[in-house]
Image (cartoon, rainbow, N blue to C red; front, side):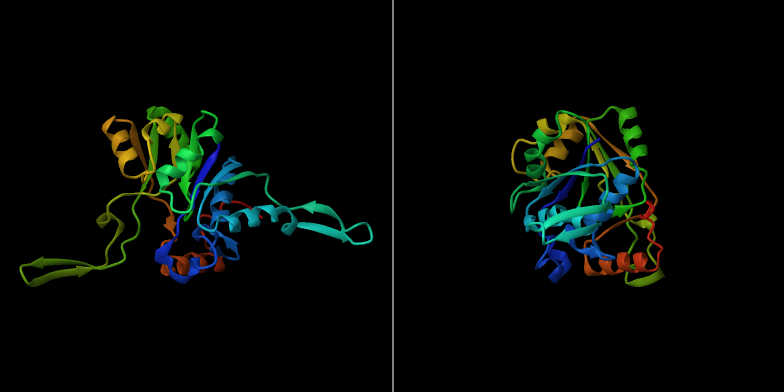
Length: 257
């Protein structure tokens, strides 16, 4: 099944990190978070990707254009008109299509623009800034069992602030916030039937008008996931992901070297 990754936004909340690269190309452990996401999908057998690029889309194209070269043993023979010979290819078995979906296009508009590339088939969809140890194939089975147009993965991010119980102006209790205090959010790792395109009539945020119409039609279901999930929305998030990677305790690293 093809994997569509939304990778065209600005990422304004992560500060100076996106001054020179788009948010999905910010590195964790020396590799873009986009690469980490793709490695997760590849682990479950999904190796064909459609990248919805936009802001600084050339950076994404440059990365993949040199991916095989940078991940292989290679000989440059300048005596033979500068020929290049690749000896061992350590790159992944991926087919990657990078589509420039526009500089300021909304998520719904980006998806609409890649319609010709999914060939009328079901496809996987996720955001270019979130990693998880989720079994993608379990989400696909859930989607097929429910027969809806859209399946989202519902996650509960960790609470960042303490929870206070008040009685008027008096504080009755204070405790660290847990997941059960946090509402479910859409964590990406979605499955879509091609009918999704019928609900996108213009350049909208996917999560607004198109999703509202799908919900009203009773065509959306949620796969609840309580395992590891983390987006890279802020510098704090990036530091946490980097720490997990450097200490070899990254839950999303399901693949072997």
